[in-house]
Amino acid sequence: MPRQTAQAEATVPNGRSCQLHPMPSSSLLWGHTQEFFADPLGFLRRAARYGPLAQLRLVNVRAILLTEPEDIKHVLVDNNRNYIKSRGVRQLKRVLGEGLLTSEGAFWRRQRRLIQPAFHRKRIAGYATVMTRFTERHLADWQEGQQRDIHQEMMHLTMEIVTKCLFDADIRQEAQELGQAINQLLADFDFRRIGPIGEFLERLDRQRQRRFQENLEVLDRLIYQLIQERRASGQDHGDLLSMLLQAQDEEADSAEARGMTDRQVRDEAMTLFIAGHETTANALSWTFYLLAQHPAVTARLHQELDAVLGPPENGRGRLPTLADLERLPYTRQVLEESMRLYPPAWIIGREAVGPDRVGGCAIQPGQVFFMSQYVTHHDPRFWPHPERFIPERFTPEEARKRPKFAYFPFGGGPRLCVGEPFARMEAHLLLATIAHRYRLELVPGAVVRPLARVTLRPARGLPMLLHVRGPR
Figure 1 (cartoon, helix red, strand yellow):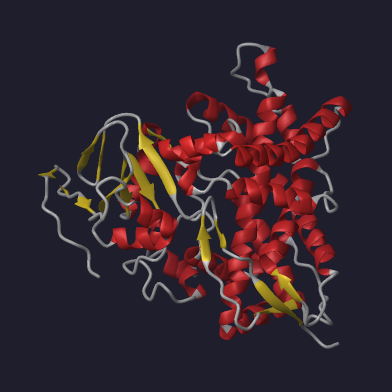
Figure 2 (cartoon, helix red, strand yellow):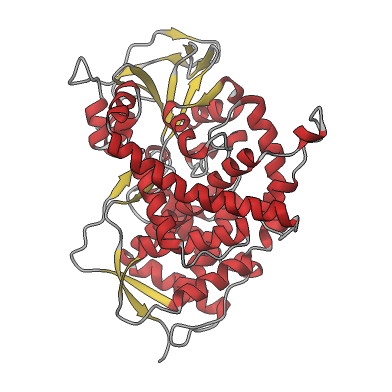
């Protein structure tokens, strides 16, 4: 369906006319709410066909879907201080508190300044061995022909890794309980619970509230216990928690205000703990799903891994190192293309706090914008045959042909995910380790579809069969 034509409202000096494109709605009361809730990804892709500034209405919230890379860049980068996170993200404060993902303004800038050194390249490089060793330990239980839910496997593995790197703690025994608590917390953030009506329904659902509080207490108990033990010992374990506890704001007025309180450390740790494993697990899950359907890509991936790491033997082989990653460009391209087709973070929302001009249109305070990685990553203007899995799109030569914000899996601008280098390195190392030793096959008859909630994950898991690589 081609983009619809709308009448221009005004012409601005830069030559781009203001064209708002209202999307027809079947409900005067609910607007597009029911369509959006029923199929968020399909609905947003349909909305994008109406033009680069498609107007949507979710009950009483009027939003504009941005699909032009230059408009996305304007909101996320060029005039980012004029925008705050959307209502959906703000409601995540119930879990994340005032962490980097949810805080705003001067407080966010202070926290970002304090946390940034924890993600310095040299410090992150030190986590590479943890990532591969924990992966090797996790694979020790895998056997030829077994059926496993690979999404749950990746969730548990990345949770163990982020907990070791964040807290210098090994939670293999507690991983299942923590995983269940996180899954239920994220499930409770169904989009139908966001907004005035959702908040009213939430207050009526006492059982849901009680379950939410119980799951939150599971996570808080772990994090506060680790904070208290670390403060009592005063030891630097070389992990992210040590960095958070030692961080000092030299611009603060007093010595007491220079560091973080236990609550501030908890909020940042909770944010890094949840986001630090959820997105990477989803990226790896979708990658294995796509590889299972594309044997030629899998064969080329195995060829590269075997050339760098040596042929595997009975599901074992040399572990990749940080230095190996430069010699594994196709492995990286496979991940990038997977995150194009199934971006773990699939939508970004922003709300204007002051007037602005976007796409040639005058914008008033309170205007809400949606920018969907999923929509833009499937736009045929930038991605010929957008439904196809073609890792070669991400060679340096091909990447230079596209506008920067035709691809933004980690967001962009000052609010770019602080853990992006950590997540990219982890996904690269884990894919190399697992794919070198195993080939994964989708269980015959399995139906896999994306579930768009806080992140984009397989709706009912990812049942796959394990095949050991190498002579036995």
